Amino acid sequence: MKAWRVHANGEPHAVMRLEEVPDPQPGPGQLLLRVRAANVNFPDALLCRGQYQVRPPLPFTPGVEICGEVLAVGEGATGARVLAQPPLPDGGFAELAVVDAATVRPAPEALDDAEAAALHIGYQTGWFGLHRRARLQAGETLLVHAAAGGVGSAAVQLGKAAGATVIGVVGGADKARTARELGCDVVLDRRSDDLVAAVKEATGGRGADVVYDPVGGEAYAKSVKCIAFEGRIVVVGFAGGAIPTPALNHALVKNYAILGLHWGLYNTKDPAAIDACHEELTKLAAQGVIKPLIGGRVPLEGAADAVQRVADGTSVGRLVVVPGAEEAR
Image (cartoon, rainbow, N blue to C red):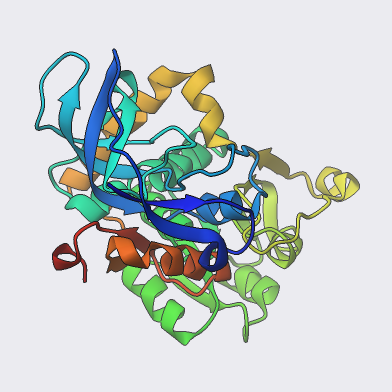
């Protein structure tokens, strides 16, 4: 089969190589999947750079989230369409993948392959961040950084589903249009708008009740200047490259909370909550309330360029690798 492999750490477009490798074989308790779609996540770029919290042995195949069709099992039935996270070092940017049967979940019927591949990590992260960590309530104001990106667009949709007023922060006119189409009540362009003043104006001086921040750096620095009394800042990641150092005296004086979110921990600390969240997301997808924003479907041969675009922050929504050029668009 064909699979992308990383033999040395560096920028994705420079270190990812499409190679012929032996077909994987499922063992007891495992499934062999035909990869129907593999979502590109920012951690894929960090894995290539050697900057992720997990560093798989070289060479490895990136791709942490897929929608696949069950072809063979150690035991059980075949043919199901499922969501899975192939365990590294053998990720999902390949034609085939082996996964543990206990970790797969049924793909929502309301979503096509690319949409389904983009559902699990981003929307689970958004749901746990907004509901489990920040306890977002209907009527509150939610500020989402990188609102037109893969992670941010999920938070926008989940925030609207929860009954919040959503302020989306983007970079550029094209992304601003996307954020409006997603349902943001207010859209701010970080390149031209005074974010702090605009948030205060939109909230009658109160500020945002919840901030969803996958960017870090300057985005975080501005968030603390427009956070409401008893507001909550959910730290999701640092796509901007700079990890801020919170001034705890400022959090004390303004009476707000800084909440870290490492969604992956729930897989071991509270797996039942992951299952319950998947059921909720499946229902919301069936109702048409959430639908992953797909910014592009690319063939397997285009995976390295897609990962690089996500690394550079130039993509809108989710880029999804669809093995088989006739399926990509």
